[in-house]
Length: 259
Ligand code: ADP
Image 1 (cartoon, protein in one colour):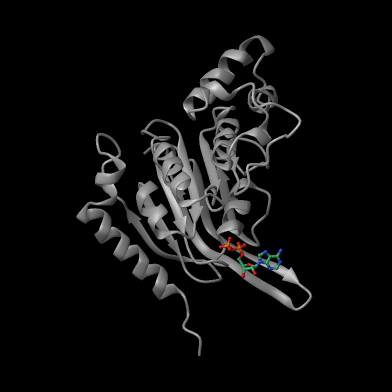
Image 2 (image 1 turned 120 degrees about the horizontal axis):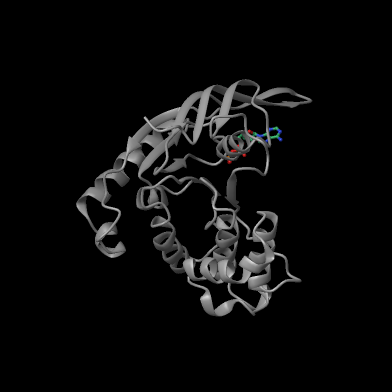
């Protein structure tokens, strides 16, 4: 068995507030292996952001143990992160934003122009390097954020509802591009969303969280083809519809009915 990218062992997290402890996550066990595209889906407030904060080491879990590439996570190391907002530097060009990420990743100055071009090409923005970030669309800004997250060639890419603020058409286009990010290999993606459609389209495996505190309600492999099929064929297939139904039912069943 390959070394896990992420391991959560008996992890639970509660926030301390004046009104007492607010249980937000777990307890849960989860392992993510190289080559996986794991989408964590759950209703709002089910602990998805807490889960990502714990995995990246920004939050120490109240209970249990987290391992990232076999060791305790250090914030800002080993992972690329894409947030809901692109968080670009407005005083730098598109290429300048990627260049900065490469610099932080320790890439020598002489190698950076070529790597910047490659990364922008990978996200479909090869022509836009000299543009200012405010001159490009929201979808293009989020592509720059993805290029930046990939700059350090992270083994693990974490994505926190990265398309939630985009219009439906742009969202679909980005989903199609991001789906091919892990074509096997040593990298993996963990993506959180509240959208069942997004989860079924992107994932090689779906983890459904319960309502707060988020525990694992369903852990489901997604056997849809990852190559050689168009997005429209995929979205229109009977297998896609069946999975969508199964995941939607699991999400619905986790949300407590108001009494
Ligand atoms: P999600 O990302 O799925 O919307 P979160 O991880 O943000 O969920 O939050 C999980 C639960 O923990 C929510 O009920 C939220 O109110 C609570 N929570 C999140 N952050 C804090 C905090 N800093 N202090 C107290 N409670 C929090």
